[in-house]
Amino acid sequence: MGGRFIRCIMIVFQQFINGLSLGSIYALIALGYTMVYGIVKLINFAHGDILMVGAYASFFVLSAMGAGPAGMLAAFFVSMIVCAGFGITIERFAYRPLRAAPRLNSLITAIAVSLILENGARVLPFIGPNPRQFPRPELRIMDFFGLSISSIQIIVIGFSALLMLALTIFINYTKRGKAMQAVSFDKDAASLMGISVNKTITFTFALGSILAAAGGVLYATAYPQVSPLMGMMPGLKAFVAAVLGGIGSVPGAMFGGIILGIAETFTKGFISSQYSDAISFSILIIVLLIKPEGIFGRTSRVKV
Image (spheres, rainbow, N blue to C red):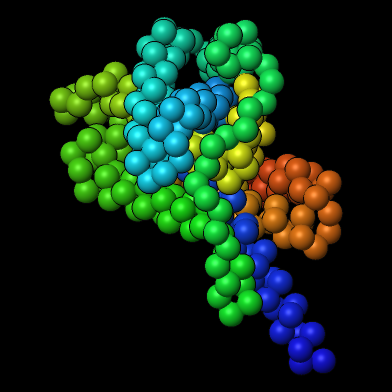
């Protein structure tokens, strides 16, 4: 009886580790959603496809350099630079001209940008519509008191935690981070205080795209396959994570991503993998019904 109970506990801890690995990736992607929404009140549905761009950029780097430590570092660096360029370009030419337009216009534009990125990648001769095997470091399984932790999981969890910590420090303790908070709170007042609203918004898109690039590399490393549509489902689930934590809240995005990843892996481990997506989107519906502002979100009052 005691042995069976211990085995059950170990299985639960194993699924928790798996969920923490997946949730860390969702959290990185969700941070891009929540930062952009916090400043321009836009749901950037093309954000998941920036993940795909980052995964392909790292794919070509790793194919050329190999999946050793130097290759992985180069893959992260190149994918972040490429995705930052995409984020800046999309904001400048797709979203900025519609900033004063109704929000529905920007939402439709975001969906259009998403479709352009997906189908544009499919027709490019060096990408194509077919999935490709992603090069990744040698997989090593380590055993800690009966828990199996792979080297890939350690990389994913460790690098995600490092990026989230760096982002938190950047937003709270740097001049640019405080400018982002000021623009998020009141654009007009921030402009009167000498803050360039356009530059701050552009920087926010670039920073969100950098995090999506890192998420794309880690996601492709954990699930070693890249395709033009690979960013669709992680992007949607990261959006669910952002809503769960409270869209517009950076700690909420981190917390929501972790919770969603754990819920998904527990569903796969103890119920059925066929229900994992249903559980994720059921969480979205429940949150919208019970607490629409999310766990860390604040209820806003609108003057009539």
